[in-house]
Length: 135
Image (cartoon, rainbow, N blue to C red; front, side, top):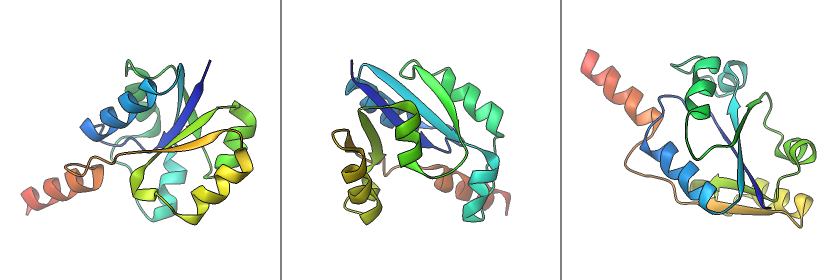
């Protein structure tokens, strides 16, 4: 059984999130998804529109997801040690970034797989559209 893992904020759940989760689930037998806590989101000086518990509930309702956990820090190696996944899925906008190259070495034989990023939408873009319409 191949256990997959991915993490994200999953604010304003949209087709990009669905595409990521659907693709990831197609590449593993069991998909664990970590949803970032409100406190963790604030590290980027951002605030999610939807609260943590509600974002978790939305992700839990997705048919591609088997288990939802909270993500309280960005340490993917600790997540690996705790959850024992075989593959971690990351958006391809992170491809060839040093942190992912280093992580793959640390978690070997587990792998990092980059999933195509849906360029047509993002929570940031949706927020911008909403802000522009309010002006």
